[in-house]
Image (cartoon, rainbow, N blue to C red; front, side, top):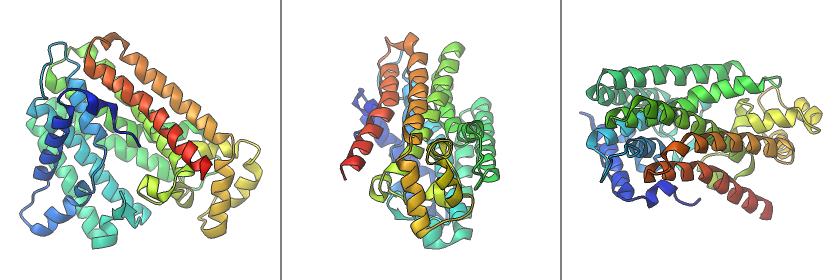
Length: 334
């Protein structure tokens, strides 16, 4: 996929390098084993959307000029550490073998060590947030709670072919959108933006996060393992029926799909179910939902269009749809 549009802004490539430096520094532990496990996914790379959004939100200050303050970078790192910790735990729950194109922590070191390493990342995130003030510390703690609530909503609906769209949206608001809205809010708070501006950036992060997850769920249906950096179609296996699947269940392919789903599947059943979802109207309908969230995100920053960082954030939201279209075109060609 094309690079994040934010990186075209002045100082953002430098700020991204500073994020990497702070991430690696944050996972240094007294033992080499913990340092290696905690830093495993950091070494695998990543888009670093959450810390970049914290930096961009801070750069929306009308008097901003130059690279981000260290406190802003560290605020973004704290959110990224929560995200990484949640991935460690998710991979244990899902019994995942790979993540970001490399062996998952649980596959390499076992479930117990993966859980402890994930807990370590959450602890380091909380430590950084505490250094940035009580408001940021409380916000990050509440966000970790919302992330867990979103995951529980999803687990409660596992293999439920009658799952409601709203239940899906509630789940992704907790497990995905909350982290992105918090990243923007922390960037705004630490940079001293006015409260109405902080609130608007927080709402932007939430709308972007909703679009981000819907797009990710469409990619789970249409992309390859190589494009995703993890096994494609995994949601169908785990019974986490996402928006394309829910819409497919409600469409012409629904009766056959319903006969296959509702329990763990593999092999030919999984292949058939994925084909039924991929060829249904559910994919287009899910993309339309993502597009509406992108429009919402874009419009929230209209009052900031004299600020380059806000324009960059708007571009990042549009990039979600354009990058998805590129993957879909490649999938149709192949």
